[in-house]
Length: 339
Image (cartoon, rainbow, N blue to C red; front, side, top):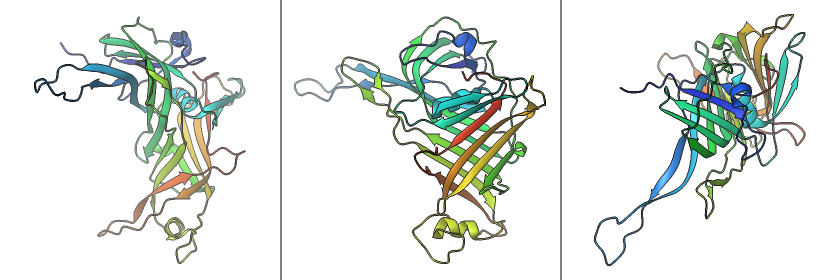
């Protein structure tokens, strides 16, 4: 009899330090309902080069060093996304009391050479295998939605250590059961104007180095984030040529190519139909991304038959100055702390 993927379990918990597996994952972590993905081993069978003086066959092969990684796909919920944002950005400040005011978590990108480490518990199917991963980092974070669809996400994780055959972890009390969100509850504002986008996406890439192996060890010695990249995109119907001119020529009023770029703020507002429990007056779950300066990547109109003119507009976020973060995310939910 085969094993179905659906009974699988995945739970996350931020570690107190590198090398310290989170022992409170069962009570203080967050279990996430996933659409796809798991961690997997990245390892090569090392085969020697041909030698003279023997036959034509491979005489032996040995296993080399190993790292772990995978992409988790999910419908975005308003508790577990906080753990992913904390891992991707590094800094979080929380206000509110959960009664008169909801808990508000503000995430900003860290300039540290290290981001938070996570412990991840995975049970594949119904007891096929149970694994605990230690020293995991969020390498990539992605959200996207179309006007008539759900808000979905993907988080790419790299891990240094794995133990298989671990004891069962009861995650029944830490599942994130907050509601989904759909495109009707999402707005994209460019320069404070609702541009009525047909879709959007947001990406954070920490570009972790994931091949730092050392003599005498099977496992990654270090995982250092390199240049952070924050990008966004949206699909727009054109009501004028201003955005195309700005992207291609530098400004919305230009008539010929220039070298400077226009840098304006982008805000993505995401809300739930569900209110935060226990808060009076009622407040909806929400997540707001603010990018103070984004630059349109060049694009051109693509007429075709009787199609209505639309374009996928990609944007590069740039940092305004040393004191201002390239991105700020504000999450409003019922969780006092981020797992």
